[in-house]
Image (cartoon, rainbow, N blue to C red; front, side, top):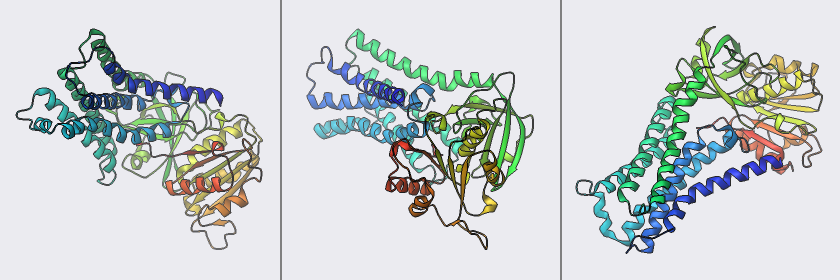
Length: 442
């Protein structure tokens, strides 16, 4: 735990340093004559925003060493939220110029404005389109794969235009070392893009998987079994996820994230259990044996293996949120781990409860208490009904809820997870002892 804290603190420090570095270079050395403080401040805010745009590429580049202390869902959540702060800093640059000197409004006339201003205005327009498209993607029903492609195109174009704008203005590149600094900055972002778009897809292309089986599960869900081809696959922690590319090359940017549902002790194959929810997932059942698949992983910190000293585990799953839980439960069974376990599994009815038969047989291999919660139970049902509530968890959870007494894992629909997190806090479960996995990474 201490090691992860130090790693997290280190990467946060690096993020802040890279964000502020352009501002520090602006303040260092000789300043251009006749530049007012407000103008320097506006440029400084723009520089910081520009650096944060570049860091957005790093946040989504799936560097495991960076994401390990936090978990991928936290990093992607930060990526979404900080994008608004980033745009505010960038927009503050021209807005301050307009406010303190209205003559700068003439730069908006692209027919007469100098090229530096044209590139700057174009960059801001692209940033606005980039953020708007991301915020409204689901409401306008913009297909995921197309959105990912356009998201990347707009981001690269906006960053390039902003860099050209900085180079053309030139006021703050008046020394050789400042020119070298911005050259290194540009090379850094080019290197990240090369890793994401060229190097990593090439590495994935060399380590394919083949579909070994496609199994129909309850609840419009399918399990695909994959076998590595001419390589040993990878080790993973139970509960982690990977990005899958099917029907396309890794270079085409058509990836989708799914939790691994197989045991971490079974290294000869991988299993992913996928519910039909969208365009890509509806095609999973059409995969054929022998078809080539590319897997980028593992990722995520949602795992029992990150808490080896825990005395017991509690799993609270809703619907397809059972998939990472099954990976952990299967792993515990293969390890013959007899620590006390509790599984709370919420579904609309038994017919939609994925892995129902296997789950009900788990007590033969594990020291586990299983609680099914059904929204629409069959006639004569004596189990839990409705939704997972604070009162229900109070009855089900172990009485001892002190720090590190148990670790709680929570995964399912967003509203259910929010309710469970609130309930756990009300029941006195320390925040560091419960963990949530949200599938909404984009």
